[in-house]
Image (cartoon, rainbow, N blue to C red):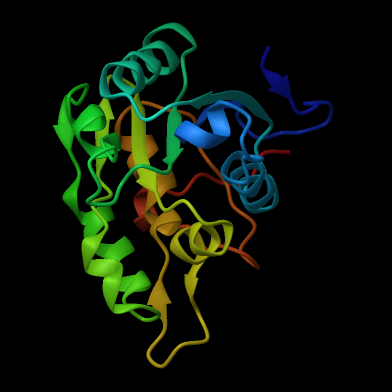
Length: 204
């Protein structure tokens, strides 16, 4: 069942977010999944909007991943879907293929920026194959599997010289453009970017 954050006295648009952790071992209980909690923690702090979470923990099976993404967008009405895991070059890593299979549009800039962030830390970041796509009213983004990497990818490296933008700064405006809710962020954690003509005045 979705976990809904209370909306009382919240003037911001509600948003439904799908979180998918792709892992053979976590989905069978061999170890605890850390991807979904890390995503909920960061997004819960970064967004001012009331959030309905729809979470899925599934194995590395391409058909199952695609089916889950279709369900979250088409049936659950998610505006944003974030996946974690299954984006490397190993045989069982098929999250990018499953994501592209449900796409209406490919958004390559997200993957390019994620790799730029990760390359600040490890040369093996060039092996990551994260993609982002649009399906109907939703933006779907593949993220890394480690909680620390998830936060760095979303938030960026503001203290670096020069600073490196995180990918989430572009997410709210992208969601605007595909007809989703108006996402508002806590600027202390993530400063969303919109053109001036796309910025709404604060609600009372």
